[in-house]
Amino acid sequence: MLKWLAGIAGTIVLLALIGGWWLFVGFSQAPKAAPGVVDIDAWRAMVREAGGVRPVEIRVLEVGSDAAPMLAARAGAFGDRWLTSYNSVQIVFPESTLVIGGAVDRLTSEGMLQSQGVWRFDDAAYGALTGAMLEASQVLITHEHLDHVMAVARHPDPASLAPHLYLNAPQIAALPQFALGTLDPVLAGLTPRLDGSVQLVAPGVVIVPMPGHTPGSQLVFITLENGQEYLMVGDIVWSMTSIEQLTMRPVFTQFIVFDPNEDRDAIRTQIRALHDLMQAEPGLVVFPSHDRVWLDELAAKNLITWGFAD
Ligand SMILES: [Zn+2]
Ligand SMILES: [Zn+2]
Picture (cartoon, rainbow, N blue to C red):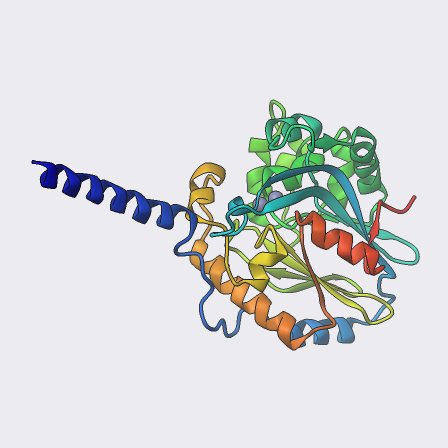
């Protein structure tokens, strides 16, 4: 009888271990190779052939920050902490600007709170963002998630914003779910200006569709006038340690955060491609949306500047 009970207990423990491994550790590793996912030579050729006056700096406006267990961002990262930034990026040209990212508004940010005492939201920064969007020649987003679209879907002056928006079809299709009430008709009736191909949208700025995290996810490849290159990767990873360690978000995060689910196979492959690209191109500055530590390092090296230009 005792032996029988011990057998059942052992089986339960074993199943729990397997389940825990599956939820928090397994099926999150990048494959050995990812040929053809990124083609930086093609992007560079587009930049070169288009010519024009390229941007002079990259600025990042943080509207909020928080902290969460790194385990949410990288499978197997037990015990580490993930310092989270919610922000929007301004690409500054000598005579104009381009804004990427609609960030998150206060209401949404409060709903996403993870760490009381660390969480903060900057109303003045959010106001600066909605204003800067109207000053920008173009406004784009990396992808159609709630923490990247609110200053678009909930902009105080959608009629003035609409002519500046350069969105792709999946991004436009997602907007109604983020509106307070019904989406303004001018936003609901937007026509896609990004067609799903690799496109140069301004001198030195190339949009590279990269579906996986969402159907409308895209990279932004930026070349400054001084030759410095950047690659914005949105939410393909939440922490740069995911690229360094070739490990994506755990299956657990899939269940509690995303609806609809991400394409995990696509992301695992994209992580391998980004990892190998960084190895081959050490001068390229890769940055995701939400890695506060990494963004601070870039700011310390004068590769980005915190806050938007006036
Ligand atoms: Zn995000
Ligand atoms: Zn996202």
